[in-house]
Image 1 (cartoon, rainbow, N blue to C red):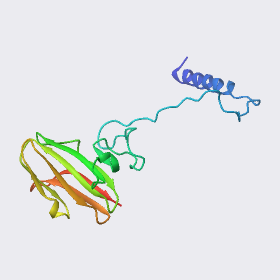
Image 2 (image 1 turned 45 degrees about the horizontal axis):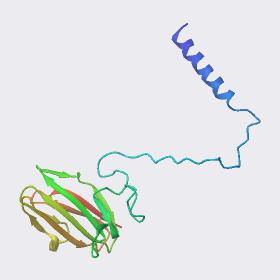
Image 3 (image 1 turned 120 degrees about the vertical axis):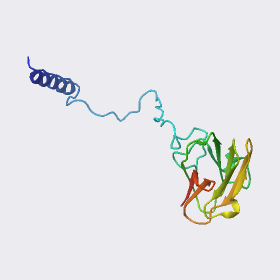
Image 4 (image 1 turned 60 degrees about the vertical axis):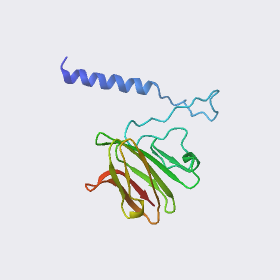
Length: 166
């Protein structure tokens, strides 16, 4: 039997199996099953776009990152969005990503560093600060307009995160 004939036989056999499962007297049931089972949603892996954990707040955007806390989760009365980052060995952890916020939100980025670095927030010079080796710093600002705001390091403007307001 040639490859072509073998493939055709396999397709015909598969079609027969599918057709055998569908008969005219099959009607959809209107009764619920005796027991329900839940199927967890597929999880995305890694990176700043991972699925939210079950402990995420109800008003958090879909796809919220584990290093982002919102509302009461921040534990801070004057902070609406808390972003926790670590700068070590010349790399940002977690990798730079985008955090969605709303105009009017008060944002705090907590940055821990293993070296002396200057932190800048585009459009918010009052939020600029320095972080020493082994220290952490709070970078706070209020979101006043829609658009993206980059949080960067030093003169070369290494991107830590982008805060995007709508």
